[in-house]
Length: 311
Image (tube, rainbow, N blue to C red):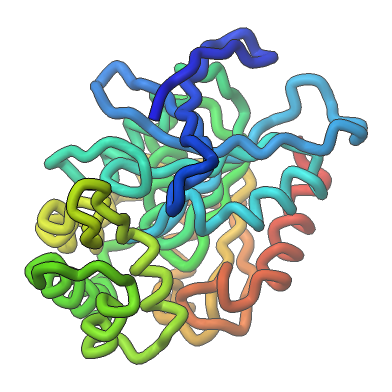
């Protein structure tokens, strides 16, 4: 792997990580931004089509994944939003995920600080934040901290409250640890057999296994995310850093997209949501927690309908 420095149309430097196309099992190129706190944020930038009548300096969209996810999860939807909304979409890897840096600290304030620095480093203003699950709480934290200009907010299947994670996430950690402790796993299919003891649904296992990469020296499968760090942070992922809506409020338009078969944004949570985000609306999607992957067209329609008349 080698790096090349290029200058974008916004005249800021980006570090483009180039992966040799002739090598097997190597991901395509992605961009990175080095933050003042030492964290490196990896991201994919999806620009609107060249033939579109995009406004100059169109407000960007920042798309954030959930726990154990990455920018890859949102690649297809990011391309759709860039095309249909004529806005640049930055699909980012939050710390300790994807191709971004690892750090012992993993909580919503730390992730919010990372994204705020990312926006400042890249001179991105009046952004729309979209985040699923862990990314949703990160997005809400950024909006309530009011350190950077945010125009619109779209949290997906999470609420601004302290609420326990589904027990499934604990099982995922157990399965991932068992894979890490099993020597000489060279094929993802072998890892999948182990993970099947902890999760029946093949799509979810496939999602988790996107975090496995082949060690070029040993040929064995290794986790690219820090399992111990994320396991230690599970309680923090259930928390929310703001407790009192009198102390923090976001006045911008906010769309909560929730799965009707999920418990993360229940009706009884709507009053507290309204106190933190007085200009909120709710869009129900007939799905579980994995709203974007389960019902991509319904999610697309909800977001486009909400954003198409907003700057």
